[in-house]
Length: 191
Ligand code: B4P
Image (cartoon, rainbow, N blue to C red):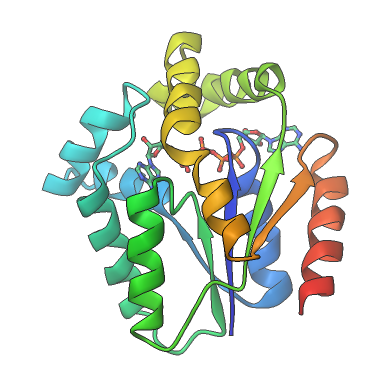
């Protein structure tokens, strides 16, 4: 089983690259951002709660995110592996994921970070915001707040995974195809 964590700032290309990687390696893709947006569309209680955080560019509280992730993994017992896209985003989420996976005789194979400068990311997100309708992509202040959340809460996970010998980083600047090639070269070398 291959279980990959895709790691990187908002707009780094996690969702974009996951779309290729899931078919390349036949993995089940779980994007917590997409799951929340699905709940928002369906106007569920979870969606209403998530929206109140996401629209400001804040992270959604850990426990609801962890519960949603675990439910999705549990519902898909027969897959070859998972791409965790945008999860974990805090140390509490990373610890919960390790405990949950080891309880099912599974584990993270590798964490792959897509690295890109803030200014490139702001341009990408503002651009997406013109068509996506995503409130969190339409305002530079909210985008910068998402970077702050990342720096404060998510960046510490780098050392969490370095300590486990599982952290890898890829240059996230270039064409989508160039970055896909960098990722597949890295992942093929790990298998
Ligand atoms: P996410 O949905 O995870 O989204 P993201 O970080 O904005 O984007 P991603 O990195 O996937 O970028 P993408 O490929 O789309 O999170 C949204 C929010 O949900 C969070 O702020 C938070 O509130 C909440 N949330 C999610 N998970 C959570 C968790 N675990 N805990 C708590 N809260 C959580 O690319 C962005 C744009 O760039 C696209 O338009 C794409 O086309 C473009 N692009 C990609 N690669 C490019 C390239 N190489 N060149 C040019 N453009 C490129």
